[in-house]
Length: 211
Figure 1 (cartoon, helix red, strand yellow):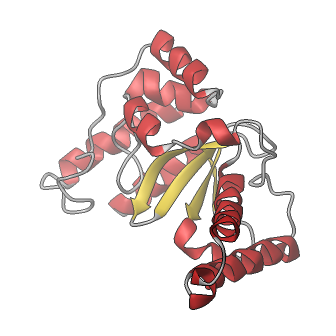
Figure 2 (cartoon, helix red, strand yellow):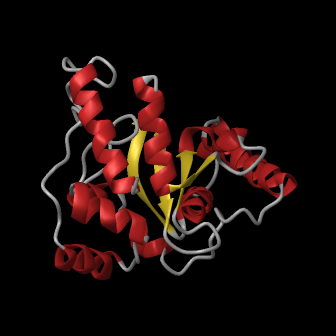
C-alpha cells in the first residue's frame, strides 16, 4: 500500500476507534486533515523560506492535507510552519549537524559546552559581566541552538519543548529527528531519529492506535 493511502487509512481508523479524541485530546488534529495545499502554494512557501521540502512531505501536504493527522499533536500547516520556524533564514547556509556524521564524543563535547554557557547565564557570574560579554555568551548559546536546526524545519511537536524537525538537506534529508532545546545539555549522542518522514508517521500513528 502506498504510504499516502496507509496514512489516510490510519486516520480513518482513528476516527472509528477514538471518536471522542481520548488519545491526543480534542484540541489537536482529531484524526482529520486540513484542506490540501496546491503545488503552487508549496513551491511559493519553499521559495519564501529558502528551503526545499522532501518529496514525501510535499505529497502529504498536497494529497492528504495542509497539516493535520499525524504523530502526537499532528503535522503543522504551512502557515504554522512559518510561525514555528523563525530561524530558517539564519540556518539556511549553516553546515548540517543532524546528518549522522558526528560521533558520540563530538555530541558530548557540544552538550558540555552548551551546559557551560547555561551555567554562566543562570548564575550571578552572568550579572557581573559587561553588556558586551553578556551578549557574546547569549549569542554563542543561540548559535548552538541554530546549528542543530540547520538544514531542517519544524513540522510538529510532541508537547512542551520537544520538536519534530524534518531534515531538508544533508545526508539525513527526508528524515525526522526529535529536538528538545531544554535538554541539549543532556545530549551524549545524536538526537533520536525516527527515519524517513513517511515511516515515522505510519509507525507512530499505528503505535498510538495500538496496532
